[in-house]
Image (cartoon, rainbow over all chains, first blue to last red; front, side, top):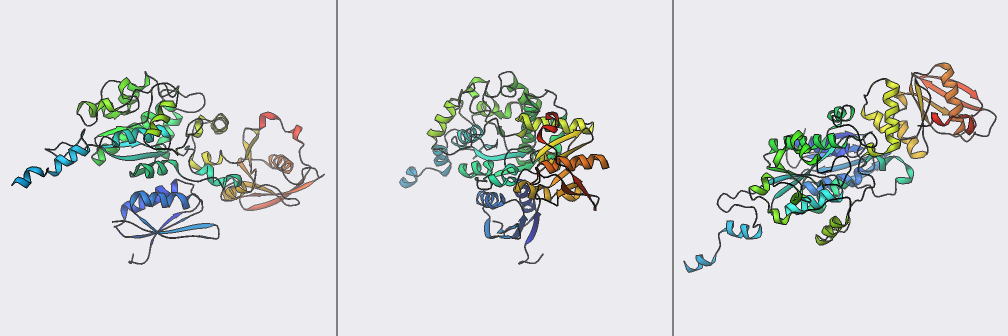
Length: 78
Length: 371
């Protein structure tokens, strides 16, 4: 994976908190400052992922809805 | 040199800030993991221990039956409700890390074979608590933590939080005296964290019974004004209707087994079982219809074509005659409910066929079919 290609976590079809759990598990395997893109269909991720980021010192870079799917791009903390 | 006499070593300063715990000689700061459900009690329990200078992190177990999350996402009428995950929210309020652990697979054995039996519904509360504390015990061992905190209060819950069950949870989970219940600790023998001086027993509490007043007063004292107050707990298994549908599922399959999709679908739609070998799951509104769309390719499914109407999944192995009956039931919930005939498309393994059927009248659907 190069520096600008985010690691992708596909949580489509999963209901919260499973997308956060998948994201948390992926983050454990990635180095600090990695970019991660979470894709999900449960609108709850728009609340839960920012909360999870605030708790763990990660940073949301972008979140958007596209064709009924929610994309959240974030940068892992140190 | 004179100046030095007035400068306290860092360890002294820390021991003034956190008098109960940090050993100035060894710099040891005890670490505890708190089971965070998202409710008030676990929030307070963690806070009480944090106030004594202990490093606290939260842990939350996702069984698949937690009321959090998926309930909010499905029904259109709930779309405008706040969708926060209460465990995450509590962790944020407390300023602690939260580890959410997927225990869906392991929890199946807890639910299907509870050693201590069920509560009023299919809630295996005592086994559930033992399981979660046991998982937390494993977690503290793996992560170098010292003890476990729960928000249990003696007499708060009829099945799992009684004077007699407190030692059972500690013993059978393997946590033993590394399990601290700060809200009712004074009603129980001192635990390791108290005996070691990691926490000051005098600053713990002696709450008991079902009243919530002491917790609300303590929350006020801590300046906590916004907290979840789930009615009937945070688990679908305490819900009578949900438990009835789960019981029906097990009976129909001839075994107490389930997958995550099964337990999700039990929360959605009308469940109608006209015969032991098949049931209908009829979407009640747009949000549920959208949710069921994600499952339709894995099920035989029906949709009215002559009139508007809900997507319906068939769980089981329906015959041709069963499909026609299902089409009549579905027609009753379509916009053609008063029409003479409704045309319904049934799709099974990618093959479609069409039924023109008279909608069933409400009184023709026996009450016992409705789960």
